Image 1 (tube, rainbow, N blue to C red):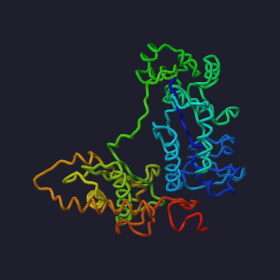
Image 2 (image 1 turned 60 degrees about the horizontal axis):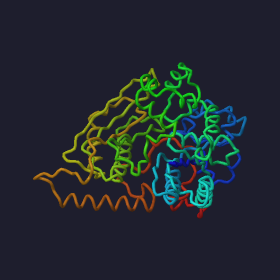
Image 3 (image 1 turned 135 degrees about the vertical axis):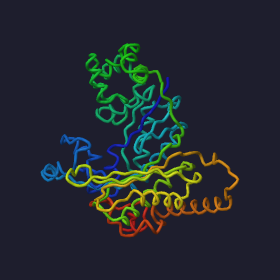
Image 4 (image 1 turned 60 degrees about the vertical axis):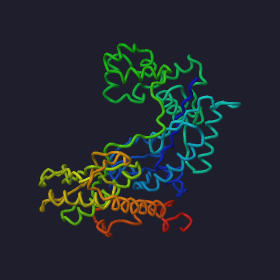
Amino acid sequence: MRAIALVDCNNFYVSCERLFQPKLEGKPVVVLSNNDGCVVSRSQEVKDLGIKMAVPWFQMKDLAKRHGIIALSSNYTLYADISNRVMRLLSQCSPDQEIYSIDESFLDLTGMDGMNSLTEYAQSIRSTIKQCVGIPVCVGIAPSKTLAKLANHVAKKQKQYHSVCDFNAMTARVLDNLLAKIEVSEVWGVGRRSTSRLQGMSIGSVLDLKRSSAKRVRAEFGVVMERIVAELNGVACLELDDVTPPRQQIICSRSFGISVSLLVDLEQAVIAYTTRAAEKLRSQHSLAGGIQVYIRTNPHKDKAPQYQPAMLIPLFEPTDDTRLLCHAALSGLQQIYRSGYMYQKAGVMLTEIIAAAARPRTLFEDVAAQQKSAALMTTLDQINRRMGSGTLQLLGEGVRKSWSMRRGNMSQRYTTEWDELAAAR
């Protein structure tokens, strides 16, 4: 039988913070989104208080005071590094891995039970990650990815499974009894609107959806829902993707910590965002043929003048050179900028992305300049990977960035910055 495992890190952002701050263990902790806006990660203690995801922080400050909830700003540098360590370990546990998100990974464990059960093997995976990285994880095992997601849900919610739930080890009757107690909204790929429509068809549980007519479901929802029904019946319709396909668009944008009106502040932000986008472009070995830049005022301030322009700048030839991309982005920014407005956000989007190996050749290209550019960008990326993001940057990005997003209570970047290493504190 096919055995697909979903390994999911528990309360990932909070768990990363607790790694280097043991005093947070057992206490209610939330991690907030950009500019300390909304809750994006909750400890179990916070979940037990009934606080939902995406709740604006300002709405729960009184509740936080009553229950001693600790709020931390997002530390994406730390989370990305811890995620990379977890995923590298998981890659050694199976020949086939699909990294689904920053804290989730599918593994193909088919035929890997050997002398032990897959539950025991999954427990050994949990122990390895906990010992080597310090992050707690749950594991769900099933014959399809959709069922593996549900198995992981059960592993998290029901303590008797000790964080590992293997649907393959259950009889059909036991599994159906379990699925009958899970709401259909928990199925991977079933959104809020689909849930309402399914409930209108008297399909309220996962078991109801599993037993529904594939023909009827396809007529009502299309082929995607039909595949979900097949997956719930143990037919694998979604294969593991060993390699994430290159993105066709790369977007980098942020809301500012404070509104800005000066062109110089917008230029610094646009250079910073273009630099990040260019790094992502090079990491997937691609080139961009165009870049769009946009700025906008705060749409929630009705009485303030509103202005939300954007401009697409085509490039003379596809490139991954940060300098050329920034030059094009600044050119567009200078054309759309208007004084007299308070800008809340800026962003860039790389478009017309192609593989670097597919660079079109022309009679007028400067091969020597391309080689120098490639060598410079490679060196830049290597230094920033080794010494920490932003160690080397364009001067135009600025030093004192008044526009940076608010992160009033951010922890150290314990694993990626020399002056913030945990051993140095």
